[in-house]
Image (cartoon, rainbow, N blue to C red; front, side, top):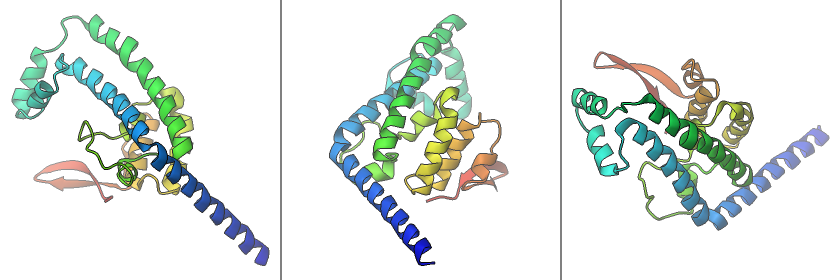
Length: 206
């Protein structure tokens, strides 16, 4: 019994030390990391928005996003590419390759610093983000299929270490299993609720 308690104590001590080291490294490199991740997130969002709105003007895309559903649909329809080849080119040459590159970089960052979710970043970084919706999690949500198995294990560990929430883990797992079912989210902090006659997925996490 004493031996088991000793092993448990050593294991917990190692986890605490490992967490402390990752937090210290994150604090030390936080400015460079945020600037790098803001670029990756911005690239990710901007290129995807361009395939929908055919503009890099954020004011214009925000204007369209804020339209009533019918007007928004009409506006987006009027902006569609006349040639499918152009949209395909953007995805194949500019989005997919960078998704892979950014995924690999985020894996490196996560292994070294622990996953830098926004709540963790805010412990050490007090400036306003360039984009108020900035969230490094989105980079993994757009990760290519060839990384999913590795990311399942990596992010399960981050969840166990409480560096991501249960809902964040469920959201990622939904992507890593091909987005074929909502069950990964329903098993991890989400529930289906009916409000005003409409059923939607709702997070139960803080």
